[in-house]
Amino acid sequence: MKKVRVPVTSEALNKHAEDVALAGKFDDLYEDARQAEVRLREAQARRAPLTEQRPLAVALDSALTAVMRAAYAAQRAEIGPRGYDDRIFRRKAMAKPAVHALTAEAERLLTLRENHRLNGIPPQPLQPAV
Image 1 (tube, one colour):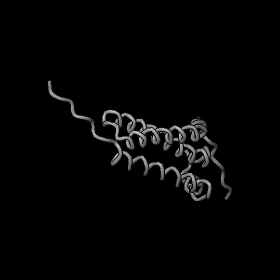
Image 2 (cartoon, rainbow, N blue to C red):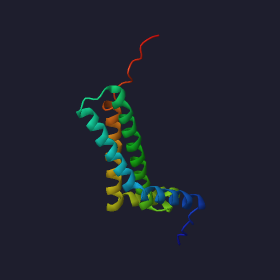
Image 3 (cartoon, one colour):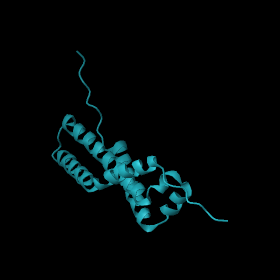
């Protein structure tokens, strides 16, 4: 019995191209997240008021979200366009060392973001009643 390879759909090719573009921005987004963390840690070190720390913490959250999405896009880009349509191909590709390393990095960033959301964002300062 001869197996026939199903051609890749144009939708999968478009998604793959988007993921490749986003994965290309990973280094810049990672640097932005690092700079956002430095600004937040400096504000915490000088004991800045919460009204100054909160926007920095929210900016770090946004930066971590962007870099995490880029990391998952890099993982999908490494798998290739067939991975969007063929779940068996995707599962086999997930076992490759390069994809495994990208997955570990994406999950590390996800954990970092979730930890920051749970513990690192100061509460909204209370506003006095009028």
